[in-house]
Image: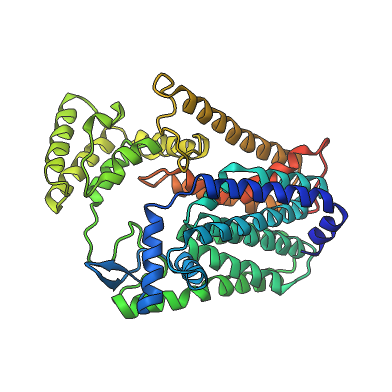
Length: 461
């Protein structure tokens, strides 16, 4: 971090003013658009049971019971804030997140400095400071802000480690730090483990390029131990409590023995592509009714299937519960749809889900209608949503330009590899939520900083 600290000292006024703007934007969201609902209350419940009863669990019929539906990283953060400021003091949580996210902006600038130069680093800091999409989430007590922070550090130390390896030298502490930050990121969200796959791919390229391979192998071992060893206590706890091998968190946020409607989820994946359908249908099951009219036309292949789907929806809405028999019917319907069009299921729909998570307006935490394209219903909100979509697209275009402006070598393989791997993984989910792409923003914003270089200059990575 010495280089970025020296740069801050030389450009103290720029960094001071930009930091003030960053904090002002984040506090604006905290005090004007706080979002405390849904998963926030689940995390908060786990944190309170951990503090009050010594049980990492959820409240069930008034009593705490152990759970593994969430990793312990974010509940531990909430527990620390609750201990200092009082139970359920979510305003303190959001203020802390605002400070953490502002610090993350500096880490993104440091990453851009390692990848490119000071001009890119200053641009990256300004873009990160004023990025409303990451700033927005500090006002939601969810794992995103801390997850982004941990990944930004993992990227930074990973890129520095790759640069040292290419110089046929070794700095073991860089790989230990990158591994520890990766472990912290995984403790926030299990899918953050993809950072290890992307970094491993970049190290594999270095391994084949360099004649002295021992240093690369040693770096890989240090990274693996530092990133995976911290997960051992959680895996052991789950084995001891549930007698189940679960080193991360369950795929469908279910505890052992809880019924998961895999057939229904399979059916949803045969047609869902957008966040609107997640809100209108997926989140309602089980426990709430959903309106069959909210299903898009792509959910039906012909009149017979249409009638069968409406029948299943009507029967579900009657009891608002899916049992194993109904789940099997949904699964059979899904199998027929996949057989009818495998290209749609395996290629086209995953592509559309990825595009939706990358390109749709990131207004889900604001008081903006989700159906933003219905201008006649809410013109003002629709115009705002389109503006945010345009801003989001601008960040993506700047990142692409920055990537093309610089020859990033294996560092580029690392960062772009993470973005591609995460996009590919998220395309397989039944719930395409835009927030899942925010973990890519440290890399995206750092690359975007390079777009302001006037002429192409090779990076020393």
